[in-house]
Length: 247
Image (cartoon, rainbow, N blue to C red):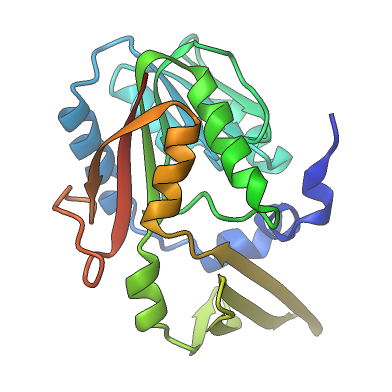
């Protein structure tokens, strides 16, 4: 298998300790509330199997497992998975894996890709490869949840410059849109050394996602616009949350 990650920005940045410093104050209460809302809406049953795609250090996989579900978490970052594996149990497993490649075919009742863990690939076909691989991991009638930023609102309300101080490090953040990607340039100095990282997320529109789903034999069921599962409205919703079923 070709290690495509070596030539892509997210491999280095997500393994950097500075990534975790910058985003240490993410709202975990909001994330847990979203997961509770999802599991209630989807009527997930105890011992149903869940695939958490791009699970990071496994915090949300762990929470899903605590709710009574069998969970596999996969992530490209070896460092993240090493940390996640410390919490493994009989019904909670983690593995280093690239979402563009097949994983446990027809095994899962549900698959989650949450908190904008998509849109990172430079090659357009890789988006379809990833969606198709996730669909292949689902049982027939299995459910896929994809939580993505709402590109319309993000682009129209872009905060171009921001300075954020965390743990004594002053992060200088510049945001831009190049017509295809939402780009975040992050520069800072630590111990006298200058660092620069870039996040680059493709501004995938709703219709493109619907095409990906159709090509992967997934039928869209719902599109929500926030973590309380309110209706999606392109101009005002913060999120674009798709619920799709494998045919």
